[in-house]
Image 1 (spheres, rainbow, N blue to C red):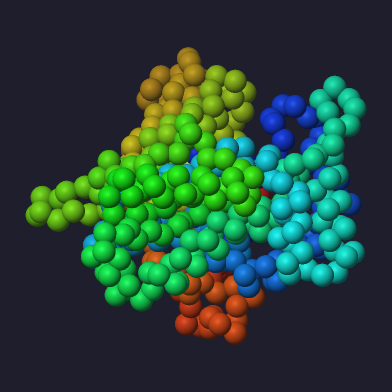
Image 2: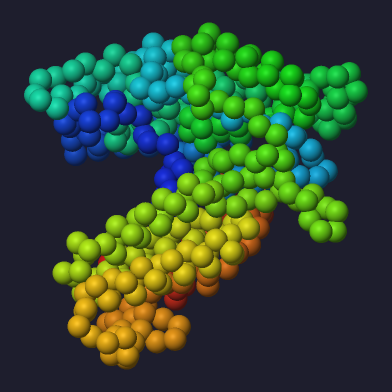
Length: 415
């Protein structure tokens, strides 16, 4: 999965689609190559300016940030000594399709005074799309699908939500003694964690206080962003009951020694999604391919999914997924060679611990090392905050392209 500046794709697709019109309604909503170049140039100009204004609670479509950072922050505030028991699972109805152009242009104009740049942004938003059966449709709301600058514009729009919660946190809930005072006075503490248009609000208080806060969020979205919360997808959940966010099932559970710990586990829908993908890649329609070709298509799916979910309590899930992939490949081999005996198949294609052909071995997710992701908070180094965050001391990881495993993975994929 992408390490920074993009949303994750662990097979489950917890990421939200980019700003788009309704699926299937248009034949060509993707910008041309010339437009993409112009949008990239626009993004290179706007991103450093607005990155200085964005808030640490936002993790989607931003350089140096990833879904695991959002999960780590939720884990930090729901476990002891922080005990944020109630969770508002927020979902904005058709968020990217309902972006109001006037509101967005006002937000952009707060920092950008150059009229040529503002006209370019406006032209990007109103470019229109080609309809499925011909003709042309204007885009009066929303941000364009597939646009390079669309994720940045969406973050600018939704930063109004971040700003509201950040101001309350800085003014009324910082330092910690203020939060303690609020609880003694019977007032809730709360914190926003947002990834694109998916967000959760962690509440330290009662369920009724969480209900009141949910109503206030709906009013804020309607008043400032002209959007509405999805009634079907917006819930208030106790951390003991668990909830799903970005593909992870997050729940507090008791241990045998009396401790109560917060676990981040791959959700059932995430596991079902990757299993469906493996089943499709090893279906009857693929028996015309060689085993080596099938392994080259299955391995990246298994490896990418395991790499995304490695920062959680995923070992048992990885073992089950490895077992499932193994038997799907065995059935595929048996279907391709129905006249060979099991002994002949075993001698030719697989041994006691692996299925291989042409030097390519079926990847076993159970071999992926599982570890706890380090919460980085505001100490995330990007090219735009060198003056504030020292890259040598910041909590961030560099990708080492000289690593043998990395080179082998890329070589296998390209081959």
